[in-house]
Each structure stands twice: as structure tokens, then as C-alpha cells.
Image (cartoon, rainbow, N blue to C red):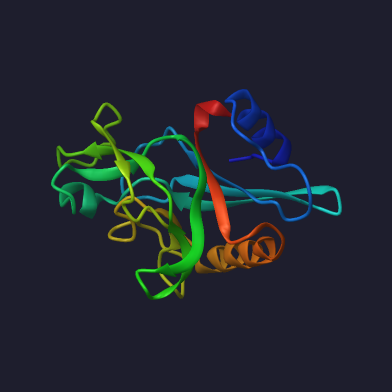
Length: 194
């Protein structure tokens, strides 16, 4: 997917979302859920857009914004598997530990999720919506190599396929935290929004 700073900024403004365009390393963390609804693949994207010395920068990483097949077929929550509802979530994440194991972006404010409870591999966005703290984190899949399948890596989290990409994301967040604090807004767009 070809997407850059300007295209993301335009899409965000068109949706009425806040786009951070002032100062250095004021990160915009933006998920892009594609129309490819094949389950268990890293067929979505996580973009990071920011300015440094006035110059716009943008990186786009392979990711998933929806859970793997395992958790769709075996929901953790009796209401159904969590699938993040597209929207902007101010201050959603904070630098912390994912499941107490490694540094990641962890949920600290409520989020809206669809509760897909029919135990199949299709994303159901006509499912009931639940609001709350569900551990919708941003983390990586395998710690040593790029993953090809989501499998158990996501039960609703936003997950990067490649540990190198994830390391770069966390390094950018660390740099941003020096100036803007350790909390981050996350926006989930759909491919049609672009």
C-alpha cells in the first residue's frame, strides 16, 4: 500500500480526527484496516507519521488490526472476540510491558470493540459493541523473525508482523516521549478512508 504523510493527514482531517502536525516527533499512530478480510494474515498496516526539523516523515509497517483465527474460533471473552472499532482513541496507549514480558504500547484508556461471537474466520462488524479496558495493546508477533500468520499473536491487539519494525516503532515512541509524554493517541482507519 502506497500511503504517505500527506495522504494520512488528509484522511484524518476529512474524518474530523486530530492530526499532530506541530513540533518534532509528535507521532501520529494510524492503523489501516484493508478490505482484504482474509483471517490470520498480516494484511493491514500500522503507519507512523511525524515531523522532524519541519520535514514530514512516514513509515508504514505490515500489521494486523484484527484477531487471528485461533481467537476468533476460541474467544477469551464469553461475549465474543474483540475487534477494534475504527475511530480515534486519544491517549489510548502508554509505554509499558505487554503481558509483563517486553516493552510495548499498552491500553490505558477505554476502547470500543465489536464482539464477534459466531466462531468463524470472518470479521463481523455488525456485532454488538463493547466499551472498556480489554488489553488492546500494540505489540509484535515473533520476537526474532517476521511472522506470516497471525495465529495466536492477536486476540484483538494491533500487532506488527516484523520485530525489527516493532523495535523501530518503540524507538520512535521513546524519542517522542522525551518531549510529548508516554501516552499516545491511536487512530484506526479503514482502507476506504484513504
